[in-house]
Amino acid sequence: MSRVPRPPLNGLIDDLYYLEGTPPYARLTLPPAPTALLVVNLGAPFRIRAGTGIGTAEYADGCVVTMATRAWEFGYPHRTRSVGAHVKPWGLAPFLPMPAAELCDRPVPVEQVWGRAAVAELRDRLAAADGPHDMLTLFEQELMRRLSGTTGLDLVRHTSSVISATGGAVAIGDLSVAAGVSSTHLTRRFRELVGVTPKRLARTQRFTATVFALDPDGPVDWAELAHDAGYFDQAHFGHEFRAFTGLTPTRYLDVRRQFRRDHPGHAMDGWPLPAD
Picture 1 (cartoon, rainbow, N blue to C red):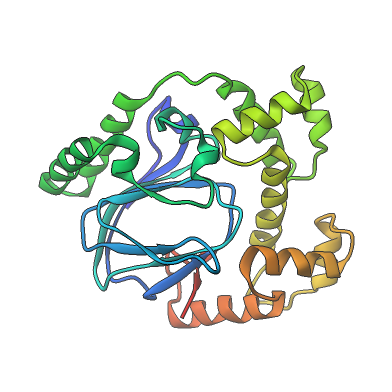
Picture 2: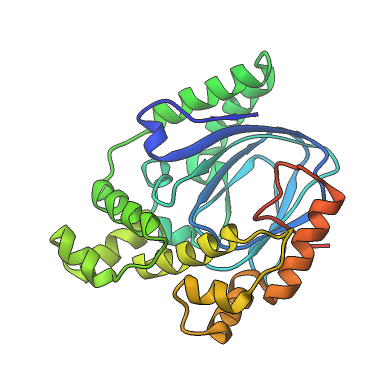
């Protein structure tokens, strides 16, 4: 179950969701995407490995994940239950007590952001709620209560929206000129509120837009796809593919097709990839 939150949260959050049940795979790989994640866990702990060569950490109360620069692995318990938010790249900033850059590629427990007692109280209220609809209402109320003013948010939101509208195909220098600020100032604000530079956001936006545009059930002309997306050549696109997913384009397509065969019509079909 999911829904878009009411204003002004809808300017920060794509959707609030309730998740319960058995996941399609015990472990899923999530490539970098122009999004952030806030999860309040109500079931058994889950595990996250935030990159190759990094150990797996366990999260009992939930986690906060700002926009990533590398793929990370999410390990579900056999039965999972949580309330969460899929957040726009800049959307976590009003809820964080620290710059977003401090959390880049470093998922942290929710209690590290909001405090142990506050999160324990929120989890108790959510667990006692009368069904998923009431749980999302409680979660939305908590987010509204914690919403704070954030310096530079309008600048970052507007610039990020232009990057999204162009599919990442925009010169960052042009964005700073249009906004009337220096490129240094724009980059600093992005690192504070998004966790990455505007150039990195544009790169991620272009890659995800390209991948989401392909039809995994049909034939894919990789050279044409790379050209249409503005990549220098197919080799450059292949390098980006491995950097973002850890897979070659053809291997990625095989994994996507296998997911669809195993779980036709599943809500998670798309970006998460089986890690097993």
